Length: 395
Image (cartoon, rainbow, N blue to C red; front, side):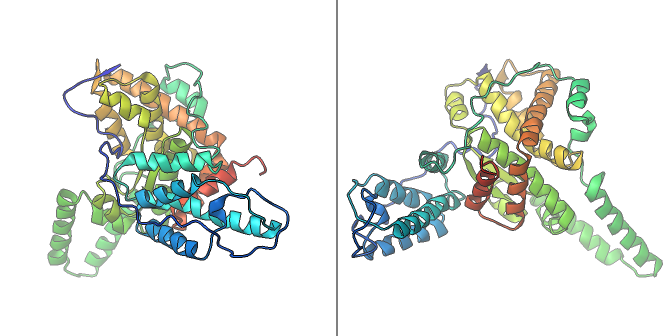
């Protein structure tokens, strides 16, 4: 299918422009961390795993780059030591085990530098680097899967497969259902109680309503979202939603820049709504640059978009969030040439929700692990590790 040339599609935080190159902050000294090792069992250990004490400074610089979210510098350093020539080195079993574990731990940390990356190709390089080191065996596990079954997914078919009515999968307006309706009822009840105590709220109420109006117009409701996110049930639901996006994107081979759960940070980074998961699809970007979009790329993008709704439906039996996801889906659907009709968009949305629902159901342990990691504020590297651990065949 082709794309209309009128305007570029509004993708879910896809960055299409490269960032300027960063200067190389690391030196290339390359002897050993341990000056003298008793000659024993292993030889042929990689040069960068045993380095002299000056290499400690290089690793500290690498860790500093991770803390600064300097992905280009951190990744450049890892790749530079990865390509160093091999050299026979005598080493004991305990030293091999300890140094290897330390290096792998540091390799994982490169994912924590992805959040501030302007060039999404660097994020893709970080994921590829770790996959080549066999740290991400499940990344892209389902990227080439052939999705079987009928493309026509009616409301009856969706209910038969999930046990849920279509209305349970539609995003809800704040205050009209679920937890938000309880919060609104509590607020109105509090106002009613204060009025019954003959407390004049008119001056304060006018100020509150004025601030709420300004927040809605100027900040997109960010302040209200920030306050409501402290309510544990709502915070948990948001995390369940975003973990659905993250897991499906990961399984489909879409590199993830990060998961933003703070509405203020989300607003600063241009993410609509209370939270957001930023992912990238290299194949889709290439096709869009050529003015076309294949059916497989559109399917993959749609599945990741609707994975949040599917996750809520799987865990809670209905979805409340996902309005921005639907808006993004519509924005690209109307740019196709010919554009999708309303009926076609509805069918594609139902099909995508069903596929994501099934993927999350099959990988429920991995989704739960991602939720638990995000709930305690873990960085992206830890979240991805928990997913891999949950999907390990040894479990």
